Image (cartoon, helix red, strand yellow):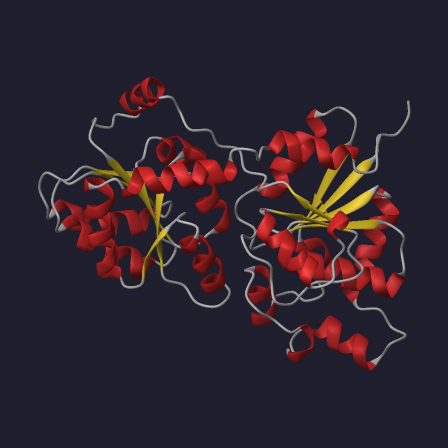
Length: 362
């Protein structure tokens, strides 16, 4: 029996959306290729990621050689004839799997793959899936063969940086979500035990900020059903105690990621910490996002989304309340939702998978 071509998908620990596993599953379902997902726990050169590594992996600006804790890069600069542990480990992975190409889905994975290619001079092609709405200011590398990007503006930016347009493919992001017809949405709402009024989905990473926003929302009374994402039991108890002090407010806690999509699909508005996959999912589902203020490269991302009418932004916690009222009582939410669906209507994980399995061929 002939060996199926293998696609090696490199990710890292900060990638929480499950994109790597989803791509693997779709590739395997094609029947023509196999896929293997490798995270940085298998190839990273340090036991604990440095602050720089984390910045790299969340898409913020970075310069690889300025961080003394990033031992693999620094050691290679000082001792050119000796490979770092991560370069050696990536070389061993290539020997083991002999993949058709390497698909990188985080900035850190991309950096490690291109670093290894330069050091080991292997011929395997590298495809970098940019999980962002804008192009980074740094991190573009001539060792990369193909860039997959979310939109035409990213492609134009990369072209200006010197990447040949034929090496940039615009496919959207590999996130499945589809807006439900109104009757299906109403049925799912009933199945989930939610009232018929409008619903706001709350997903905030920082617990202190979540507490602050949650408290402000409770003070508004029963303006909507609030669906709060909170997997941690102790944190849910704290929030439940706050909610118990307020009467006539519908609160539902989402306690597992498996249920997130169902609750998000029946929501009208979402209040989010900035997260590319979650914002994109809202766009595909026709849910209007209120995004809380962030720092670093997220500023560039949010400026782009704001300028295209895809999100609204709350710079302070108290601004969430005003924006919620505006979303629930005016045409702003439907307008944002329609803009998001137009921006993502031609993107599908099926198209992405088809490209990945035909890039080199069976």
